[in-house]
Image (cartoon, rainbow, N blue to C red):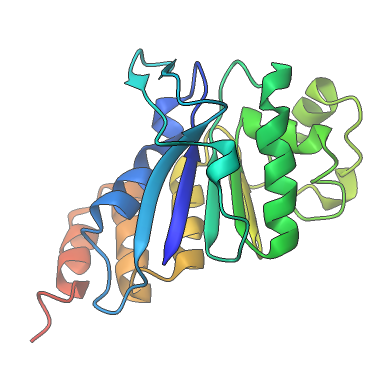
Length: 211
């Protein structure tokens, strides 16, 4: 079973997690033989945090509870508070997870935290722009590996810009292999275009429709 740990911190950018958290938790479009997925919120402690949208989140577990193995997935959302030194613990854990073959997914401001730790220096990645990383992370040395796309998947590291939440979700779902390929394609096409034909393609791709 995969355990997806969603890191929660004050000013968490709610919308950046919306697509991926909803699909992994609800399992509404999972294929019949999808691997088991458990979604947990985690934090520096189990004290509540307030998201950018004003929602209160109480973490299910603390950083020390995160299992360091290939079946773990860590989601790091954007926030305005990543410069707080207390978040160093989760970035250290991210490094351990990457080394263990686990999947680490960072979006927006969380990519700066990875850059500060040197975790983007030798791997393809993206963010809100190369200049953004250079401005926010003086020690950033990954320019030659920067890819100017909304979201970039490099094996077990998936990074995204603040505008890449949908593609980021698609790449995470693809990494976990919980959707049929045609379901994933129709899902992404529908939510990125709003075209009715993709909605019906999505519905027709689901296991309950196939006889």
